[in-house]
Image 1 (cartoon, rainbow over the protein chains, first blue to last red):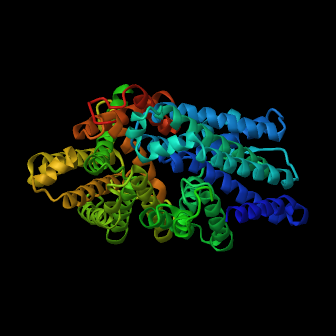
Image 2: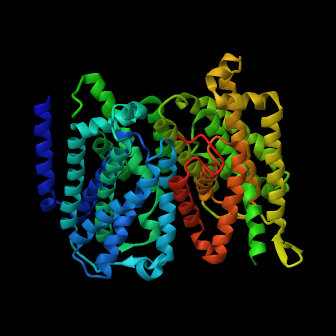
Image 3: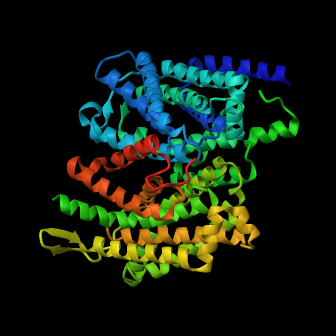
Length: 306
Length: 284
């Protein structure tokens, strides 16, 4: 089983690597977005799926990365790969600022702080017009090449997934999951829960930061409303939950299924689509808390790493 | 100028306190943070708008409709959904109410459209010496005080209110004393939604009504609870007034644009320095 899985994985990766040589521009852009959603859902999974601390504002890191990269490319003329990495670093800085006060506490403090963060960043970005262009947005020099972004985005998605694999199969991951199951017990066993939560949070911020930068580079134009939308957070949560939070491949599965669905069916019915997301969240929490992959793992007795 | 700002802050604060009391009630009684609290407020505002629009009912009389209607909505929500996650890990109840909140907002988008709507009622200001107060804000504040006082009377004096406080102190002991905890949970959720609805009906006269107007109130209500001390009901009053004041002062010294950012910085600072709130609460 495991061997078949690895072979399938290798074939998929090779197919994705040669895909841009045979695809249309539209195809490349679509796949690029799928990679973005995989990276985002997987990153949310790192903090919320593993430690049980719900982040309602992960798009804040995406936006932070987008603006950092946007300003570095547009105003200072950095090359886009460096600017996007800087976006990841800035997202981690933001994560420290928020995580330091909020993760020391148990309870819903972290969740609510993240719920507000997004709005606040949007306000700040709109306010500092000199640097960010305010509500008028920020245009980047044109770049007629989605293919390098395609590979970069794919690499980030792969890296975040590999990171998740490394964490889940490590002692560090076990400690995170102990915090999720019973934080008091984790403390009693000598785990420095605050430090572990903070590390997980930092790791979960860097992916969205880089991805935000790449998305900004790809679109060539950013404005507060387009990089801080609540729906981005909602979508990554739904994808991770639907596929199976706290697993390695659940967020990937959720992203693939829901993104396909979104492209084929929902693009025309935006509010109905979001209503449907709300219903999925409620249904998954009540009926299928471990997601599709969790159900499959249980039914077919699969190893935890698939 | 400062006097005017202080009074405006207190006027807004009374409203915040009332709405936050609802959120705090649910949190105190069942340890659930209801992320859908703000969207419930939005439904209250729409109730007022449509009653005004269709039958010309005064926004203040519409409180008599919006509060009972959303009380029932709250009881149903608790009975059907929230009841199942009260004892589950926090993640479940947060995500569940988040899902409900998204569903409500988008249901409102679909049925009411995202047009901005307003209730043109009681415009103008009272002039009192050097100060001017918008009429709708003064009246909203009076109603908020009245309703909050009513809620406190209910909590302090009635048997049901005492039972509710008992459950929030210790569910097990309350159960041993013969209190039907499930029923108290439903009651608390209903009352909380009625308080949010009252907030919605009162702000309907002052601000633009649209489906996404509610979410910010979830955040502000939580901030008020944290300021006052979680599980400390009188603390919510203090927290509400404080938030109102800080917001108004910040719009005096900075600009109104950064209101939300100021409230947010306040939350992070309080969590950093004194997470149990200004009055003693039960934060962990």
